[in-house]
Image 1 (cartoon, rainbow, N blue to C red):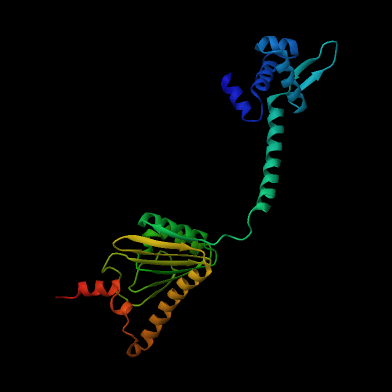
Image 2 (cartoon, rainbow, N blue to C red):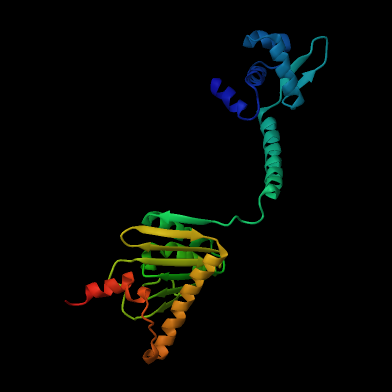
Length: 267
């Protein structure tokens, strides 16, 4: 009984409304006086609930020397509630959506931890509708297989760059690699992704795993340009290896990949 009362209250019935309605269902037609006596509540509170139930169309009233009330069938009531609820949900969705900001707020988030960053990368892939640009030494298969396959199958163009050759999980993925050697020489360190020129994510996975996730137009454009430039440079150096350009900067001579190469060289 108490469980039924609670469930009815979830649909807008008061506790007294619920008790009155259940009493009428069990006992049939009855006066307010009899209902109050059966459920041991004051007549004023019972008559207040009878008014609520009648106005909502949940009970019938028969005129006579003594007014009596009869419960409408639960099926009719909940069909009525369901219809009203669906209509209200439709109206609320429409009206509240109009109040939302039409322009997405700009954000730049710092993200840490390999699991968090991999999950965020998967979310970016899932949201892509037109194009994805990737620059990574992570093996895409199997870490990102499910998301990339689904993206390729829904028509998203996927362009990937890596210094060494990596496995790709779908034949439609366009891979550009600076070397034909398989990426096996060191753990995966670098990941960049741009989706639809709207969102960008980049992170480094070395002593600590730190990254940046953003929809800032300038930062997204810079990440996209970096990926494109790596592809352009790779194809240019394949065509004219003798024209390979180096400019001797601090970055060029002292970045993490240079140190990786030095560690691999025989002493």
